Image (cartoon, rainbow, N blue to C red):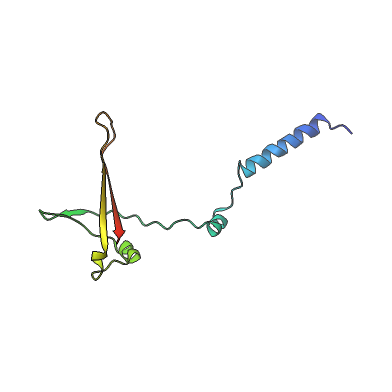
Length: 104
């Protein structure tokens, strides 16, 4: 039995609707995807720098120091790594400084 044009068009519309629903790849609801692939936990804090005439100082936020287990007894177990990236002379980019806390 031959399919009518209406049946063929209806099947094509169903395929398009199914593709729109699923997208190019299968996407799971956020709650389920977090259980399967948990996202990283990120803490971001802005702190002010202090200057005493000889050195810059910054307070490490309590949440971060707790996670890194930094206290007055083991503060020497950490180093701070600075990285300065200067743009090319003709570039309109700004200087970029990255500061990283490293447990030794």
